[in-house]
Length: 137
Image: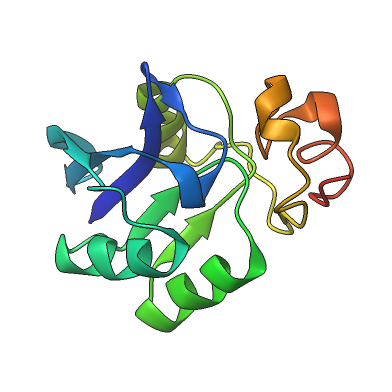
């Protein structure tokens, strides 16, 4: 199993399509055997699923993620755990323990609204992504 987490400063980055890095975890027999932080090289929404596929990733943990990116991940056979926040390592540990808190209906539909400049990111509860059924408001 290979798990990728959208990554920034040790935490789950909250907007899949804007992530600059993934932390990738190799899992064997239910335990993390290796990790690396990999740059996305500025890839956008469409290219990220392909990048994850190239790396052999079969599971993604992220914050907010739009419907198009979700479709690309599904087409690539990558299992999605969206709406996750907090420490990336702790999220992977929770996944392996079977108790990861995630939102199966996570959505990000506010592209182009400009609130990222105000410090908000998709997936943050303060503007509704994580706490209202996953629909950004």
